[in-house]
Length: 97
Image (tube, rainbow, N blue to C red):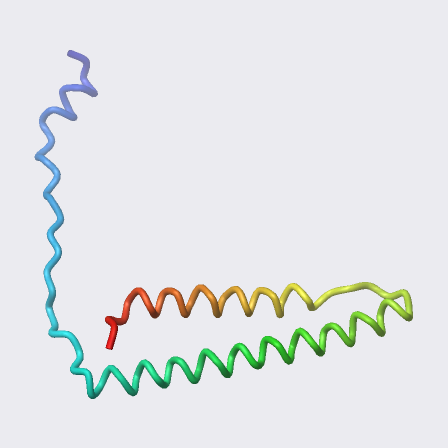
């Protein structure tokens, strides 16, 4: 046996991971307003993303008219994508009410 194989054979076995819950789930009277608040926040961010997209569209039109460079639309689209990922993650983490 090679030296590397001997070293690996003498290592202790990897412990198995178990899932333990250290806290109880939140009661419905706490979780429901929290979920509603997250929903309102998601709508506000979505409205801001739409407003930003409209603003950038106007800037895009002006810059195309003036034959200038284009930027800013990627930031608005990235914000909308980030909101989509965050809301999906929140729905996965929070239990249904």
